[in-house]
Length: 122
Image 1: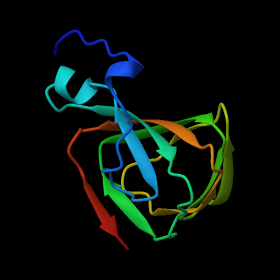
Image 2: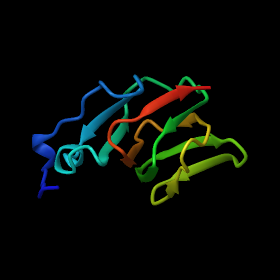
Image 3: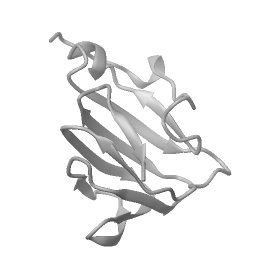
Image 4: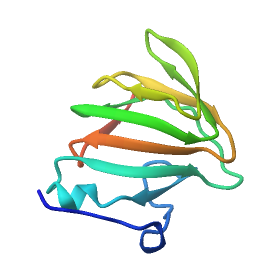
């Protein structure tokens, strides 16, 4: 592992992540940890909305923290939850979930172990 520091001006948001209705800003943790973890900020793309598909991720750990706005997720066995600014969720490994809706100004901080993982539609 190595030291890493990243400033927003040098890491723009790009629309090439898992979901087309979000854009992602990589925070350099994947490279700093040699793939042990990934950390990024996800934000809503103007005019695009969720498609609401059920899925799960094959991960060891996934944590999301709402920086701005709100999002509604449904988690299998736990129902729907509206996550607002300051909400932190540990999405247990392989939990089936789907996004129902999000605000136009949504921003999420996400940490996942390992950095490379599989997403399975279900």
